[in-house]
Image (cartoon, rainbow, N blue to C red; front, side, top):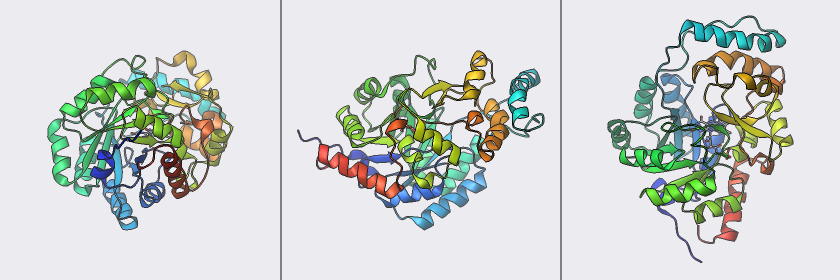
Length: 355
Ligand SMILES: Cc1cc2nc3c(=O)[nH]c(=O)nc-3n(C[C@H](O)[C@H](O)[C@H](O)COP(=O)(O)O)c2cc1C
């Protein structure tokens, strides 16, 4: 059977139908550059960066690769939580902070960067590809990115979200199955109902939109990439597989947990950040389980747990770190990113020649 799904590869200008997913906390520009230089699409997670840092880091990536790369932002409004909600959330975190030797939490000056300012910076930086999660851009902003020379990927967890991005003018859809590590991208429907596995999601999205689809979630090797192409995707996005590369720069304690993880080691939780995200189950997740629905929504809880998570990483206390990982984590093969891209491309080539 000969299948040729090359519109995505051709439009972006890459050699392999492989995207390294953007990962806050796990995709420094060294990883982006290594992946892009190896002929796949490297991504850079910029959601937590101030506008000036976005411009500076895109310039750094450009200096290190002449291949296409992708920059990711979270679509979000500045939150205005009630003081009582913040206090209640701080109370829940107090015992964990005490165990790490931290004092009471202070309320941060701001819970997140201003999204509009980040968009202006990204328009100015105009990387070859931009992608967005947690929400959707209005079509005027999508057009501005295209005029600036950036291709636009919208992340979707349901058919309705994919169609909304297509109507808004996106060039590509990243269809994120519920196996995926990190935060759920859901922005339209109910979170739990929008937890659709990749095997069911990708063919339904591919049938519902005309633009190319990138499959994400649980893909760890050439077989997973080939399967995604057979399901109707034109490329596969891998996060957890690249998290194990030395270039991801993650804390040693996180790396060790990735190496020990099994198929049933992860679950979704909103206790770390206020938005459902998949990570390796640890003591914090278990002790906070009764309060799963009580913590304030993203980004408030994320900002409130930030200091605890950083302190835990410094002290090598994985029980209090957010250990984001997908359901395929046990299949991760730690190796340099360029070697991983080559391994994946060779495996795919053996299964589906001429991809
Ligand atoms: C540690 C981690 C951080 C992530 N951060 C982001 C992010 O900042 N933006 C985003 O769009 N996706 C993010 N993701 C999702 C990945 O880009 C990718 O879609 C996902 O990891 C694919 O599923 P997999 O982990 O099973 O390969 C993150 C995933 C992980 C594991």
